[in-house]
Length: 429
Image 1 (cartoon, helix red, strand yellow):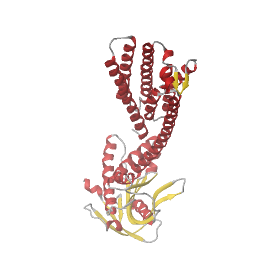
Image 2 (image 1 turned 180 degrees about the horizontal axis):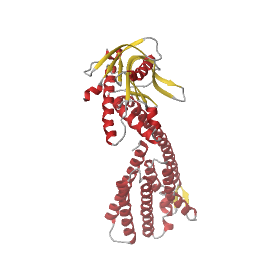
Image 3 (image 1 turned 90 degrees about the vertical axis):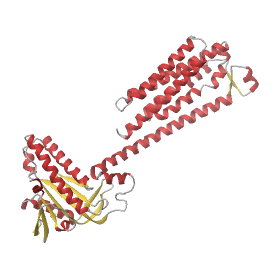
């Protein structure tokens, strides 16, 4: 579940819990106060039970798929429950006092109390539209009371305590003004909190996208370090460092793809690249880029593990093992085997963020990258699909069958280099 969805679901769960607690309190208090089953008592008890059960149902069943539906259910049940309880309380007061006109002033002074209680719940609804809808519902109570005051000619405002004590139609103007100010303040706070939620959710989405990028290009271990702030990418600009660079590409991919549907080509590439990336991540490598059917990885960025050449070599061995297992499945399914080449070199590279402000890319460039690519391509001239440079061989230990190939010319590069042929297929015979 994405972080935005999680926030919304958790917020609604809190809303439902608080709503259910309120409904439960109303039920218990009314049950304790009830001496006889009057129409008002039965109405309040029934309304609170329905309110409670609906809130609990929404809490128990809310998920991403049903969020909008249960949000509407929870809001509606809470509003109706509070409205019924409040209305019946007023009716009860009217019956006790002998007439609505005798207590109109007292009711007006408390017109915002229900609004206060409900508006706080809106802080957990997260979605702006839901918050606005809830605010509109909450306004029903003070607006209704204000209309009742406006059409009652006997109601008036005063600060005289003697008059307030004697006349039920008198409204304490100071108390009413304070209540109005608090209502406005709570509304402003809810609006501000909603804006904060929108900013926080946007930040959460951006962070989630960054995490997706970490998981795509870096091994899980490196990704965790970046997310936790233990490792910062590109903060100090580019730097020169020793890196093991690995290239792999599919043999005769152009001819192979000519006989396939475009979607089948994409599926093949996706499966192949998934296998290669899994091997890269197992040995703490970084996926640099995909170039058609080729995969470029480096070991030693964004930080060195001290055995980067060894990790790159072990990754190459694992890549061949994974390809062999995949080919067994393909043969069983009547599909042709896939062959690939692997080349690894170790040397100095420039590492850092490359590009413009519009598009930055964490990349590795330098002669070592070009040499690794050429070594991979040179496999077509040897009896193996796996070549490493002497710079790699001098930094690793292994028991894989191998054979030196000294003084080899590399296409597009002056001078010759020493290579080592690796025969991982002999491990399976």
